[in-house]
Image (cartoon, rainbow, N blue to C red; front, side, top):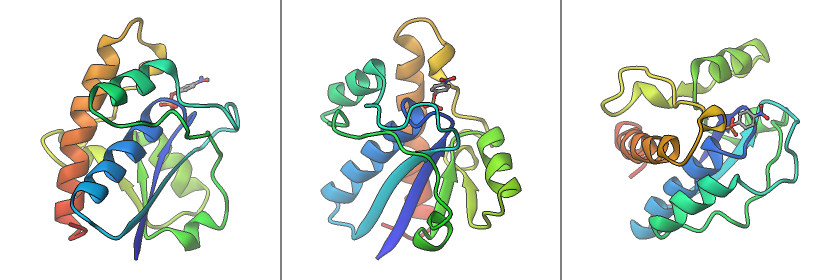
Length: 149
Ligand code: 4NP
């Protein structure tokens, strides 16, 4: 079974949403994939995803309310086939820590290497709608291009 670890800074906004979207696609298509998410920071360990990520996911019939934030572990390098960063800073941090199988999710779909914008710093819900739209597009393309679906 192939495995994917989605990475952002806090593991409360973007990567749990990516985790939920990818899991829904895997379930709907009966794909055999192990999917998880983690943060490069230790700031939010044990916390549920932020309210707006739970809300936007729910609007698309995805329940991420039970996820709990965790930080990156050394073993993740061995456990996961794909370590998928939400932005270039995450990718740089991963590379500096010695992770090799690092992918930038914005390199897929129609986003030309763009970062998934960090909605933690956006006022309001609109940022989360943009993040959802982007993640849905780039994750589908990632699964196709990497022959995972
Ligand atoms: P995330 O968003 O990386 O998408 O989970 C953030 C969450 C928390 C913080 C920054 C980004 N923070 O500074 O605490």
